[in-house]
Every structure is written in C-alpha cells, then in structure tokens.
Image (cartoon, rainbow, N blue to C red; front, side, top):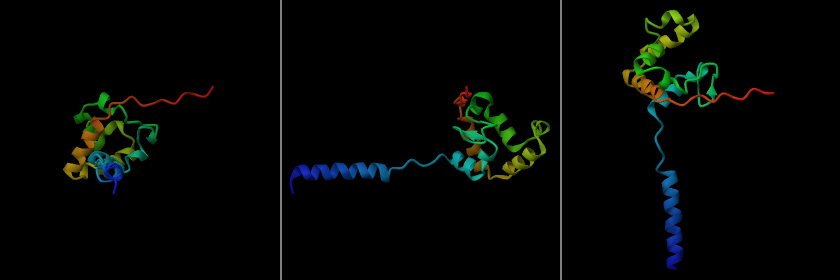
Length: 120
C-alpha cells in the first residue's frame, strides 16, 4: 500500500477517534439541573421558562444565597409563592453531592440573558 494512502487513513482514523471517543463529560450540576426539571420554572441560554432566567445568577448571588434560594431555606421562604415553596423543598432532600454540584453549576452562570428585540 502506498505510504500516502496509509497517511490519509491514519489522519482519517485520528479525526474519527478524537470526535467519537474523546467526548467531554457533561457538567454534574447541569445533569442535576436537567434531571430535576429546573427548566420548568427557570431558563438557561434561552431554554426553559423565560420568565425566570438564571443565566446571570452567579453575578447576582453568591453560592450561599443560591443555596438558600434553591432549598427554600428560612430567609427566602416568605418571598416564595406556595407552589414554588413546594417545588423547592424537594431540593433540600437531594444527596449532598448532587446539591453541591447544582449550586456550583448555578454559581458559574455569569452571562447576561439575551433579551429578544420587541417587534415593531
């Protein structure tokens, strides 16, 4: 076999290997966000309930305040509607590793949400 054909085959194989096998693992906090269906009430990157975007939550709140909001702890309870309170109380029962991953993921969200232009 010609060395040029071998070289092309090796390059093709390397390209295939780098895209197929070297996939980046999803963020564990993102997995919790998706698994707990947070997008029913909140949006990230324009996906989910656009009334409550979390794209810049890391700019607005520190990790402790995010945790208080996520778990509906005592300081934030009075500001929550009953439906939100019920939904958020289940997050306090998450395994510690999952809750920590979710808080870390949310604290890293520091992008201003894109506001769609109003039609003229």
